[in-house]
Amino acid sequence: RHDEAEVLDEASIKSLKSNPDTILPVDLEFDLEDEDGTITTQHRTFDPVPCCNVSDVATMSANPRHDEAMLWETGILGANVRQLPKSSTSSKSEILDWVLLQSGPIIARNQKYIGGYWSGRNNAFGPDVEKPSPKTPKYFAQQGGWMATREQLIFMHNYECFAGIFPPYDPPQYNNDGLFSNNVEFWSGGLQVYGGLYAGCNMQRVISLHPDHFSKHFLYHTSNNKQKGALLKDRVMKVNDFYGQLNSVVKAARRNIEQEKASATVL
Image (cartoon, rainbow, N blue to C red; front, side, top):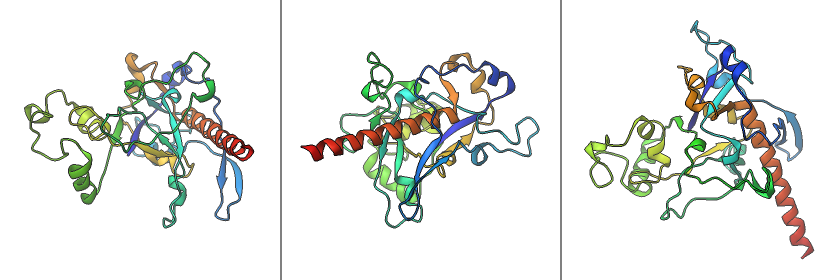
């Protein structure tokens, strides 16, 4: 799955205010494990080239910097991270190591959802800040698109999606052939896949937090118009800042794991 990103124009760079969630530090020092198990610390940033390096359009920045890409309708307050088991067969086993579990509605019948370490755990945002509901739209980070193989689509239709994913789109889950109350965000923005209401599949979204892979989850929203919408002024932030904050959350989760291990050893 892919998130959308835009390249900030000069006016937006000057006017973009600090995101209200930026109480967490932007930590770009990543602890990475080599093939032999050695841990090294590397300074890494968001790489704008995979999504946003456009060389043949005069109105777009040809070589955006790592701190010029922005995303919207997301924020560190709604983030949960989790360490997944590494693959023993894949040549890129680090893809499923530490991941971001993106926010989205969870329906009662879904027993497959996995939890994670919330960014605000242990009063990271202060004692009065509560964990936002997974249904909060400002943390959905609606997708730029999604892809699946034929086999995956058949599996989703038969086993994962309450109302199926293929036509016909019939009542009671769908009305007016699926056009009633289902807009572009439902069909191409991912709500059909991760949404949980009525016809939603309620699948969980994960993004690799490894520096070699994180930046490849983004697509360029080439209209570059989200940064100009007053409605989203409090919902935008730089991708690089968000990535550094996610790294801070991962480090906090690691410390928590080590503390729990130490407590278990003492007991």
